[in-house]
Image (tube, rainbow, N blue to C red; front, side, top):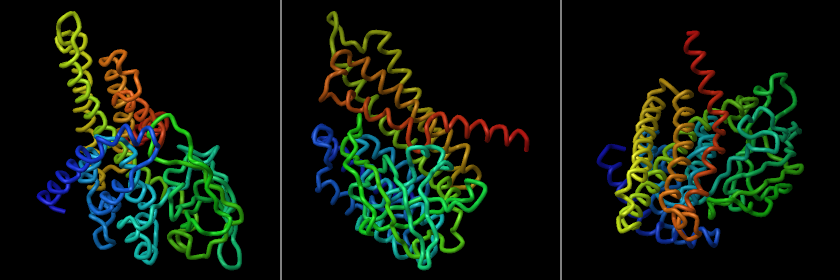
Length: 384
């Protein structure tokens, strides 16, 4: 997509977000529901497939272009982006990174159009940011595999049509060589989804546990075919690297909204006969948030450019995700502080975003996992 086309897409998405989604934020938070009309608008604009290549029905955005788009999506409730985020991100990328051409042709157009919603079923009780410890098993049968296990905190599980399930075979000595990914349709016998999780924030974005009891899948369900056996861990890591830049861009978009809410309130709220925007300590908080926002945006776009070039697909994504997710938490905290008592009240935007922002430091790899990745990459580069 050229720059003129991208600009048109960004303008259209900006209008949708600010005119159609922002007015519904309080309703979405209160009801934990995303209106059907919003879903239809998102699908009609191609948002379910913005990162999927054009020859599979998507918009084919580069990582740098995607980051710019996601910053626009981040301006509103994270639940909006969550509708189609996994199709473009960690779930769709399982097929793009590890699938056979037949699997891509069969599935990616359905993800890109919004006909299917996909879920990335990796996390378990003892396997979250480090998937090497997962316990879900996939045992060989005469006709394929039988999968047993459970997954938790799976985004879009209550509405997913297909799950990208990661399971181990119990054959390889090295844990990271023993995991494969499987494409598992929702309607297979033995697959069930628990009730929606009751979360602190990000209401309207549904997560739930997924249970697999003697779920039989054919050989064709193994992502990557015969060559994909044992490559699930590496596929997951590549998907998460892409997803980390995506989430970092989302954090930048939310920080922009929080800053605008803070500036607007500071100009309107009066104390001792003066707008609180005249108070230097309030100005200091605004200055810190503005500076961190600009630093985060620059880091995300730089990491995205290197990701596209193939010059850095590990260090940059982790640095971007680590900084941006921590940054938006600080910006959200300052926003509540600037609002004072009002910032602690339900129905005020910064209170809602304060709850929403907390999750970004956890998923796609916790901040602590990012620290480990960053340090290991720094040591590896020093060793040459």
